[in-house]
Image (cartoon, rainbow over all chains, first blue to last red):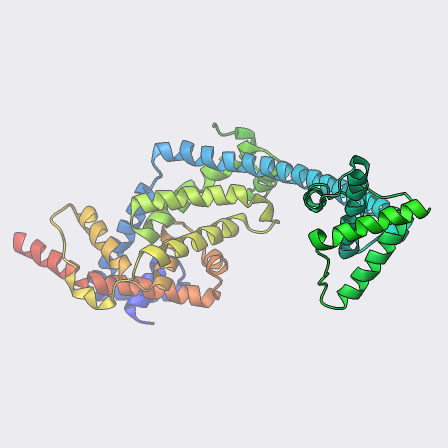
Amino acid sequence: MTTQDLIIGHYEETLTETQQAELDSLLENSPEAQTLFEQHGVIEESMKKESEELVPPFGLREATLGAALATAVETIGGGIAAWLSSKIAITVTTVIVGGAAVGLGIALSGDDEVGQDQKTPVEMTTEMNVNNNVIDASANDNEGTNSPSAVSTDNYRSLSTSETPTTAATEPQTQRDISAVDAAESKDLQIDFNFERDAPAVIEQTRVEGANN
Amino acid sequence: MSNSNNLTPLSDEDLMSRFQEGSDDAFVELYDRYNRRLYGYCVQMLKDKEFAEDLFQEIFIRVARKRHHFQGGNFSGWLFAIARNQCLNTLRDAVSHTSLDDVGVLRAPDQELYDETGEILKQAIEKLSPEMKEALVLRVYSEFSYQEIAEITEAKLATVKVRIHRAKLRLHDLLTPYFADRYSKQSSTI
């Protein structure tokens, strides 16, 4: 151990009795050792003095405790809020999912009941067009006119699935036109049916069939 | 926020347990026990009082927020582990360590003995390596034992002893020009 090691050990209070005796001997007989001892003493004393003077400012206590304890309260409040939020979210989700499941179940059971009437969009559109033709043709017939332009205009105005023909007179025409559509679907769904051109003939045919019946 | 005297006999760990159960007074007591040591650590490590005060406050806020993370054991070690992490993060962001080559620039300002030594000493402590400085600060300014410092810094006991010993040797080396200057002044006045 060097002299400085012994001196530092002395101030750290880690020396054994033997080491302390060795240091005491050195300090008695060596001016250099005494100088070193004093210098380390000044360092130790300065550090101790500074340590004692390092005290938090008065205002810092209140500010720190206030902020820290507020944080603690926020944490508790936040925890409760988070717990409640999670419970509410679970409840709402359950209700939505449950409702959707019930709704889906009803829809599926409803589909089974009306499944026989289910048609493709092309079929429905074609059927509607045909039906409109029939209705408008009947109307024109009743009024004693058969203007092709009237048929054409009303055709676009009255596109509705509610207008389902129920008379026997329209049935053959409907069936025939659906067959025509089926055939047309195989030709990229292009229906070669011009209302202005074909409607008068259809109307005339309907009238003849009606008269025959 | 007054301190409750009936809490004084309780250990740090008991106080922390009470704080976990909602006792603000227990937290205040812990603050009063550790504020000076923690403040000294913050100031010495950061060397900037404003930074140190912010850090000091942040540490106690963190203790309050993370109180349920403390599950027994040594409270002071846990507290200073938090302080150390916060401090290292701040230092990493804000402070760059000065080269040890700047040793010879230390000179005594014209002040009273301990004041001027204290000023020089602050500069000298800044010249220490981060590990030596931290060990020394925890020893001198936060008054921890070697064993406690070993736990806080996650170092071996022997390593802590060596760091503190070397830190003091280094401080003396750094202050040698100052001492020489001082003794020469004393000699000339005699």
